[in-house]
Amino acid sequence: MSALLAADQLTMRFGGLTAVKEFSCAIESGELFGLIGPNGAGKTTVFNLLTGVYRPSSGTVTFAQSDITGQPPPSIAARGMSRTFQNIRLFDELSALENVMAGAHLRGNINLFDALLRTGRHAREEKRQRDWAYKLLAFMGLEERAGLAAKHLPYGDRRKLEIARALATEPKLICLDEPAAGMNPSEKQGLAQLIRRIRDQLHVTVLLIEHDMQLVMGLCERIVVLDHGETIACGKPRDIQSDARVIEAYLGVADG
Amino acid sequence: MARNLLVMLGLLAGCYGFNFVMAEFIEVVYVDYINLCGLAIILAVGLNVINGLAGQFSLGHAGFMSVGAFAGAYASIMLTYGVIESGPLSFVSMGSFLLCLALSGLSAAAVGALVGAPTLRLKGDYLAIATLGFAEITRIVLTAQDAIGGPTGLKRIPKMPLLPGSEKWDGGTSTFWIYAFVCLVILLSVNLQRSTFGRALICVRENELAAETMGVRASRMKIMAFVYGAFFAGIAGCLYAHYQHSVRPDDFTTVRSIEVVVMLVLGGLGSLTGAVVGAVIVTLLPQFLRPLEESLGLSGLSMVVYAALLLLMMLFRPQGIFGQRELSLKLLRRLVPGGGKESRP
Image (cartoon, rainbow over the protein chains, first blue to last red):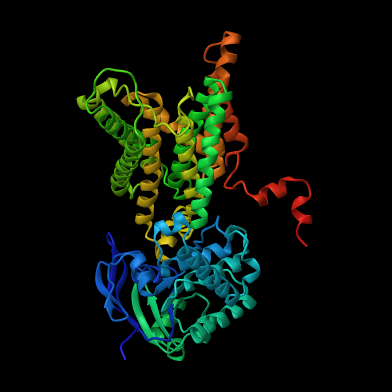
């Protein structure tokens, strides 16, 4: 079986700086895949390359058997890849419910005239979006917050709301950029369970960037490690933990 | 949709009644104020979709208005007189008028798409400057066209068409036609704002990158907003030309574009109710300050008061009168003391 998402020799140069060098990986459908590395290793740049925010200097991205290299984000979202952001990017003035409904807009098939004239088709689409959004809010444990403006939500809920919004686009693969950042240990545990449920119950493949080693090692089935834009290791958590280059990247080398 | 049609028919009947009352009981000068308010509302509500919902700061609304005004007025003169000749001002026929309105709306919308497309990459101040430049270019190009009268513009634009039973109304039927479009633009904009498209527009305003990664095609949404706003600016231009019976390129200077933006900012950017209220205030304020100015013998007072009002507004309520809120039953209930909480179990 071929991979759901495959990156081949992805390279991203910003002027003289090579942020990501020849990044390759293949994620199977249904996997929990981790992407880790020290600060500035180029993890978020990889996400931006995969989701179309950046166009790679060289290399290709293949998603669900088609080449999506250099396609704009909306087309990639339409093909079934969704993401969250390291620095949360919610639609602050909209309510939590409306944020998730905005994610569901993608799968609607109504035109502007349906909207302007409030046709029956528009009413059905609104209902579909609303029901789906409520379902996802409940899934994320946010149903109580539906009516609150996104900007008024507490931090942890903002992170979860971003995930709910990404799920609303009905993705095959969801890319989570440091979802546990800034959470306390018990919140992190809850989040780990949630991520597992996203894969098991919603059947969405998960690609995860995370700094918290315990979380990543406990959750992910395979991990790729980046350092200074280069892939230094790839494999099962146990192998990664004992890999000499990974330890070196994180802890440094002893002198002498 | 059927309900919308019924609402619109009801509103048209209301407009007819409104025009009747205006013609029979109200002094001509006040009728003029009311008509000018109507035109301002159409402009402001249309611009609110561009500047308020989609968050694209456009300063070129007068440009769209002028395109509609000249397209509609020229077509109207051709359809009514065939060629331009002297004679008494006549009424344009109903069919021709609707055709002219459609033409003016569509030509302005086409220009809106043309302006929207290349300026999509610009944000904030840069977009404002580009749209301002577009409006000025439009004005200068129109001034150079001899076919539409050059700097003196078009004259003897026919009056708006008669309605059944309106033969004896001295002020004509302008109020009906203007307010029919006020109702139409408000009805459509309420629908748009509450629709999934309205939400997508707000997403583009709130966070363009996030909107794009959620599958919202930001550039398409922005063009849509420009086309929508420009369409109604064109309609307003056509109505304005028929209302004044003459139109010059200099009727559409930057000052007019800014005036519409001021209406929005005063009422609350992003609020449809705010746009309506802002349009009425900005239109009426100078009219009522002028008599005061004359009686006190202080010429220029109205400009001072106007500027001071805006300054105070920016200092104490920068989000505008309504902020982003809308006038709704819920808000009214909250304004009644204690009403909001008790109504809920």
